[in-house]
Image (cartoon, rainbow, N blue to C red; front, side):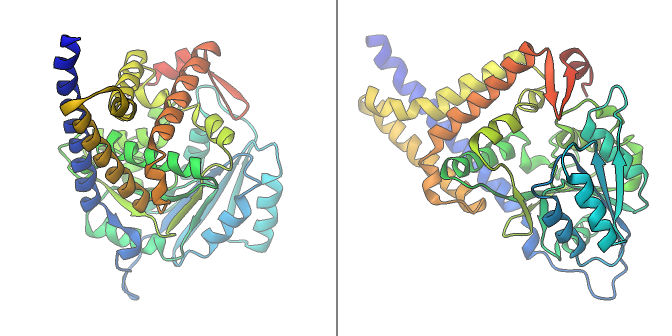
Length: 389
């Protein structure tokens, strides 16, 4: 018991310091990341580089038409739009063909086969990029809704800041309170995981990529060999960013909140659990010990303080009170940035437990199935692990 009273204040103090450090890094990253809506537009007579937008689609009948119509409203004069139908088994292909008859400027490609050694989405994006001609390539998903001035603002920012690869965080919409709690927690952890404050620094190994908005110079895309070095990576967006930084090119990160880049991410809790199972383990390179470390750290720093309020006394309890206050302020800030209810800050423990459940479900299924089952195709763990950069 005496040992317990000696150790607990130190543990509480360490937890508080760790939370304060995370808060400081969050605030610093927030100061560095510019909002697309606040960026100036290109002047009316400014020369505009040709941009090729590439969006892969597989079984996206629910959102594909709304997304494509938003792409057609982009206020950008020299825009090539390529939609790659990747072996869809629903009505995605028919919807795209109908849209082409209405808007002949659309370029729709139908893929019927997947070459060995490729993930479907990665192959579709590579195929789309090779069939396009823009000086810049914007990779996006087939369910993303763009505000019309988004691309003009992004191109101006990329050119003025000499960025070779510009990534934008989307305005993520979720239908329920629990899912909104998850996105608040996920957004905070994502910026910490990618070390957002170091992305702009060419000397830092920090890198980022987001499937909703990866804008890259074509010459840079070709120099890094496109998606070929990461053709078996489920986390293709992040690893594209890593390739850019490894080759010494410049990268930057902006925010697409306030309706600039809208993603209706998942429609239900189970849909989210299933949707994230393919890349939660891939993000840490299928490293079991890293997963254990992350889980223990999250339980110790994010879950235990809430129990410690009732299980500790004296200085330890007061340190945990301070810890929870700082955590709540941190999550309230994340809620504000993600345009979620402030009450989601109070749902933080539930969101962390949900995150850990998804992570360990992903790990279990990866070993149980000896790989991942993604979009009706099985990819073995051996070939997934082999594609490491």
